Amino acid sequence: MAKKLDGADGEAGNSGSVLLDAAPSKGSAPVAAPPKLRRRPMLALVGLGLVVMGALLAVWVFVSNTDSTSAVAVRNTVMRGEMITAADLMSVQVTPDPALQIVPGAELDLFVGLRAGRDLSAGTLLTREATTEQVVPGAGQSVVGLALTAELMPGEPLQVGDRVRVVATPGQAGDPATFESADTLFPAEVVGVAMSVESGRTVVSVLVPEAEAAQIAQWSSAGRAAVVLDSREGP
Image 1: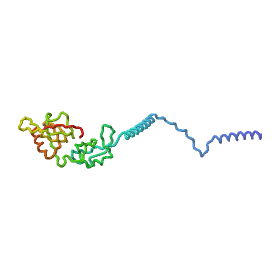
Image 2: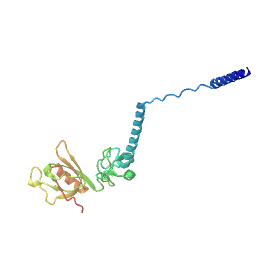
Image 3: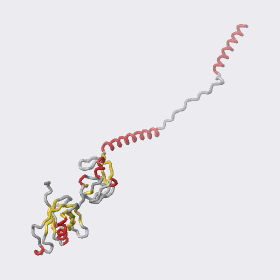
Image 4: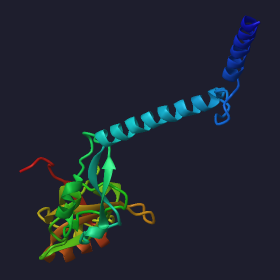
């Protein structure tokens, strides 16, 4: 009987032990199941696209900065003979080209105080040949405009800086009495060439000595002035 009770007690003890192990303790919280990860392929593709675009942008910025160079450009229009101020110039980034005779941006200050050798349009690149230290016309010089027909000009188009000679002609009427001596000619320098819309003639502005300007102007007004182009080779 005692053994039975012992066995019963043992079984009861084992059973109680099992029940105590299976029952949760009062202080512990239930363990939640791990969340299921959701895959969103569209978000992954968008993120990958942003990464690729950022890389391409970085490459473009690097290449742009590598291939471009600083150059001096004209901010405000400067007419021929006017003094160039700092406000008239600006520094821009351009792609280098051997055909472009650009002025490096670091030399911008060197051109402040010079004068425009020809009309400088806003937004164009500045060249060294477009500026001068002298005023045109200078002391003892004058600029005379010659309205010439095609017969009174060389067949080669005239350019600023060309050395020419202004020659007296008999005039359009061909009156021998008005013919000047063959020795009546004056050396001059072309400082401007423009087409007159009203008359259809080419207006050639020449730089001549001040003492000869009046005579040349009279020839021009009477249609008796012709221009001869001399050699463009250096002296």
